[in-house]
Image 1 (cartoon, rainbow, N blue to C red):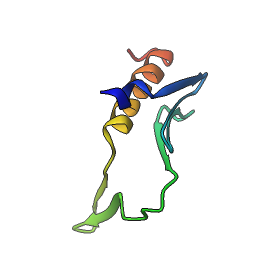
Image 2 (cartoon, rainbow, N blue to C red):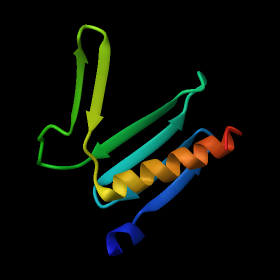
Image 3 (cartoon, rainbow, N blue to C red):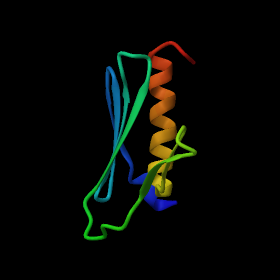
Length: 88
């Protein structure tokens, strides 16, 4: 639980940026009423953390693996942006 206390948050009109250890999570509100999530990690470990594929030539599948800190940052960031946009 100590790791979760080390997450810092910076708010911008269209973004929430979370920082912890050597990682950053940015949740952006786009002008198209969509949202973007950007993950950055400074690491020597370059193993695959996401997949993007098309099944049956029409089903787009995107999956990502995130840490607990990133999951919490994404959840809070989306909630904050949805509130700012008047959705929640």
